[in-house]
Image (cartoon, rainbow, N blue to C red):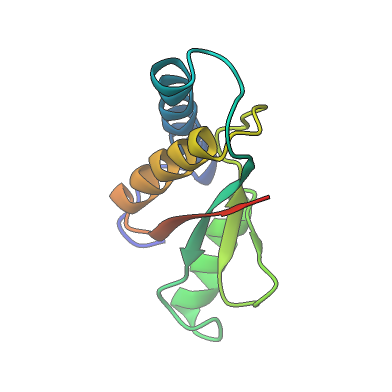
Length: 119
């Protein structure tokens, strides 16, 4: 990948750490440490910037796979479900974690966005 001075695992670890911090902060500030309210799912979508059949596109996809990410059902973007590895069912804390991970990934130049849905 261009202009990235970190390994895929280092980036994933940084994104996971931020997701965990944001998720835990949400749990303490909004849920008083209790799993309550609406349940759902949250994840991060990462959209590759280069076409897959180019040299840059192949390198980009290889890097994302080395981060442990897989293409979603569309075959056009990668996703990372529950990046905070949150055991709560509350959608708010999972969204906070996904937003934290996406923020770190964007800082490394990825086109990353948090998404969620109610269960």
